[in-house]
Length: 207
Image (cartoon, rainbow, N blue to C red):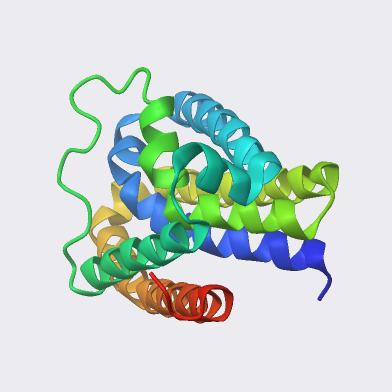
């Protein structure tokens, strides 16, 4: 697989539209398809802008401006994803209410922390280091678009069968969410191991 495909696939897997659908279930239930689409598209635009900055700035943005080693950020991202995976496997996902009572303008709350996080930011930095900036942005935009379309498809299916089979939908979502969490945990461990290996290779184990 070429660098473009790897960058697209890494970000898409880290976005994990199914798990995003679970975390956005409050909005899936309370918003109609048009309003939900509008909020999701805005969130993706915000996320794309943030990812573009990190893809362009790369490790320099971390080490020279934020005074944080990128590898530290990568390992931290792996730990966050590992915690998310464990919570989903145990059935202790997001709180009952994540967005509060007003869900009329939640695009920024969708973007952070559900789309923009340590893992996806790391993937954007890696895309920028592997590819020319224009191609890297195309890979990032394609991954966001694919994830958004998958979430909208889930929303459409949910609305289609909600009234007749809401109990079964919730049960299916719970089971599938736990199964998907196995892949999330695996990628999390891979991020942690990769970060540690790169740290040892680059710094010789020095702190």
